[in-house]
View 1: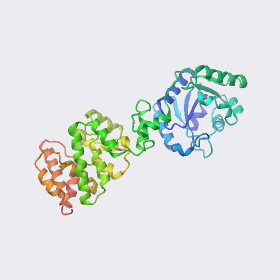
View 2 (view 1 turned 90 degrees about the vertical axis):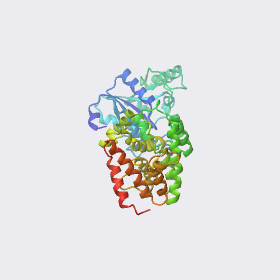
View 3 (view 1 turned 135 degrees about the vertical axis):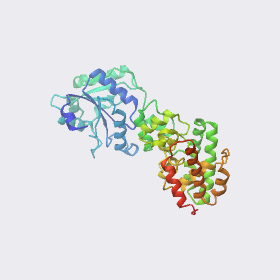
View 4 (view 1 turned 60 degrees about the vertical axis):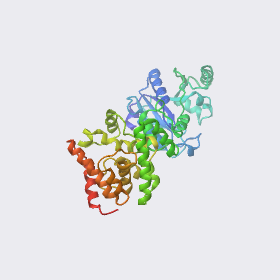
Length: 402
């Protein structure tokens, strides 16, 4: 939010809160305020140092700001302010309103949107008498407080301080950030309650989901994947564990990368193309024509966003498991080779040779597999993936290394 924006704003509705996380209920309130009171802008104000909450339980302000920005950025009437999160002191409403008044035109109307539960405690707010002189409050219906009780609260305050409390006419929205955080932590779906861009951000930064267990993810994949794909996944996990132990790699990382390596394999062609655009995954000529090759890159993003995997080695192994690349780590090689030779694989020409070489020389075994894949693509007149060619060349140079 720029200072120039406030300089021109003669009517501003402010929706404050922790937004930890922001949800569709917040957006519904902003839409209702916009429709009923017609301010020039609705300004979302994530608070910084919260006066009535234990800040150890509140997500970092920068994350809350970014989620709010992502949730509102496509709406032309909505803006987000850093005013409170950039303050080192406690975020009292009176201080914020005074700062807004100083930036807005002298005749600007400021409305502060407040929930019915907060209205019940508003007379305890800092300098509330002065605050009522500087702005009007818009009271939002909330579950647990009847319309009759809300009106009585507003009438009592208006009788004592003048017409400073306005009533928002909208249905009660029964969504809470506390419940959303709990759903995140339990691994439940929150799509219906939270804007997807904000949800993706929360998952990307693992803000609310507690440590996810291997068995939980395995059970989820069993429900989502076809039986054949799931059996293959279990085979890759089994083989990756054995290879990791044999070559002295991190077994736990190998298990996770193997479990999630094909998590995006069965997405439709259009879904893969759309996710590549949405997540900024660049496609070369071979990936554009053979979109299935993108499932590794999409799978790495899904592992991060949907399952809270943040280890860069695991994500890289998932990303490149189907193509390889020119600077493969030991974990990359283990996952790629396990994918080639899992014990449930149907037979194909070099499989027996690869299994024989797998525990003698991982580079030679993997080279046989990638060379076979390249030959197949050439015979089908398909473009060759540059990462696969780079991997083949690097493995050739390192062929004598185990």
